[in-house]
Image (cartoon, rainbow, N blue to C red; front, side, top):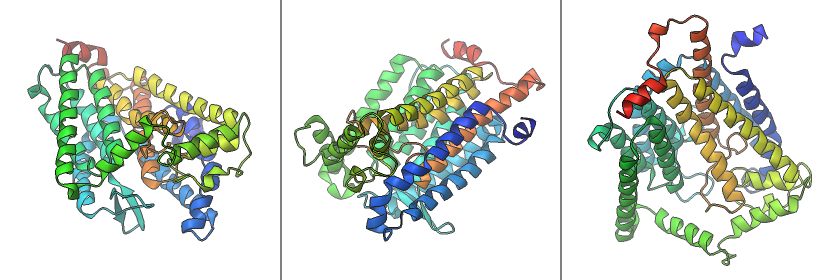
Length: 398
């Protein structure tokens, strides 16, 4: 145990759950990639498994490096990361590439690695950490003027993402809203922020309808919403129909590893609809066990956030974990037809480097908070700490 503690800082339960999910992801990724392998990889499914393992390895390096940092340093580094994220979003808007047949340019190429990276994933994490840092300072928030810095940062980020990816924009806005709520922003102001956001979205839609060359996504959003509201349109809902069919065919214990039939027909079977493939192969029992492990991980996030001795520590855990939690809920919700198709991935289980890397960085941030608190308990001077969350929250409410 001492040897483990020497190299792995922070909450060991969280480490254990992360490693379990990483290992569990190998078989579903290998199985769900078969149709894509025959379509793009010459039938070699092992190539997709190798790629996923490489993504996890690189993500593991990111997670380990970040978790060794003091979380206060992360708060300082984000002051550089946020402008860099905005620059990447601008580059993506004008020079982004398409991946997997997607009709939107959301990726930029990394020449050194020969890979593509979805910049919105990095920007969402950078934005939330930046907001956590800003709200950790004691200040009275009553009007839009008091919130001009965070609202400007949120608005700029969302404007740069919205033309290509509405679902990610909606998820980021939701995460920022939750963070503002916990940080103590009055509900009277929060309702105004929601109204302003909806107004901005309406203006964007009207502009695109008037000038269609700006974005090709409004028609896609409309089709997905209409298809979700009108389930009788089977031709347009073929993705969710196939996903529900896969889940139903899994029954209690599933067909067995690698024996999914619907993975051969489901688009993005190894990413957007990987949960349906998992349920078909491992049944209700397997999917329930998977949900149970995610639930245990989310419970550790809550514990770490509640143990944090500073407002920044608590908000930082919330900022880093909210994306993981929401993506999990949305991905599973889409598979069982509770939500329109969004393209959100299932953390660790879905293929894709951007998702895995950003998830690992976020987990590194959470682990950083957990081990920094331990170090404080065993000897860090209390004078070096920020004011407690409760004290600052009371100040924020006047």
